[in-house]
Image (tube, rainbow, N blue to C red; front, side, top):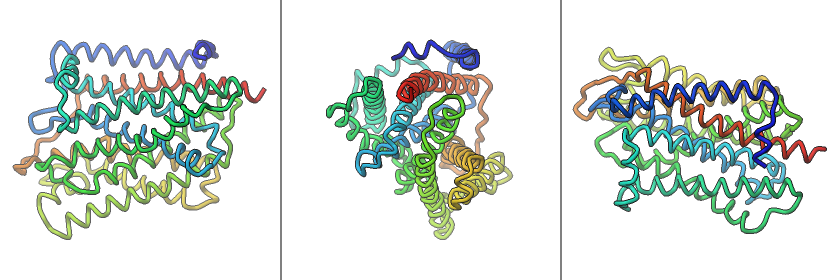
Length: 385
């Protein structure tokens, strides 16, 4: 089936070429980082995680969001999702691949990865993160490829493939739960020291992943003959709406706990992000805009006449993606490090090479996604003929 990805219009190859240029720029910057070290990044002793881990955290959520299609289709027999589940699984493959690449660039020297394998430490959350992420990638490759292959041949999906699809449901919850434990297990970082970090991560994931999937399906509908159907889009949109409401509710709980208890160390992280602290307010416009976009997305999705209009649906999904990305891809990591445990403020500014590497990895993800979606669209169009 992969040969389908080698056939396309000039617009398709222009897009592939554009992604390859970004990947090349990111790779050159990565070689510079390999030669010079992580000193070329904006990270420091006080802020030891930056753009790389922030993007990793966000993309784990995108990958986990695919389960929001698998659960209704497998556990509740909601068959309208039958033809689009594979698009969610392919999105998960691209997202997990990016997650792993962000880990590689964050540790500086890739050879250090072998330490996790050669010296396994089950009491380390990182050890379990490696297992669940690689396992989830493998499961989605198995299920996605074989499901599409069966569709192409017009035969039922074998039971062993369905078994792996069922396994993917708890596995999707595990990847973002373990990622949340990486944060909430650090007692010195008050902004992360909360028992609802994992539920907050999952709520955000089940909003951002399906929101990105809807935008991708709208693009698929525009550039191909395959139409996922209005019923499918509206059902996913309702899921996004409820998940985003839960996410905003959890963020509200964090504010109540921090400010009603009036514990300075719990308040300062949120103050720095949303209102500014001791004259440091570089992230305030980002975080306040993210809050507005989050409520805007929910408002649109809550009103059926607005939600049914494609333009508003796309706007709502884009708003929720921007809101959750700013929350987890910018604010969460920085807010945990600033101020530090000694209440000192050392701000973080990502450097040009750091951003170029991150863009290059995102381009790798979109390249994988483009190739996989090209194959999936070809099979779906073949079914229509």
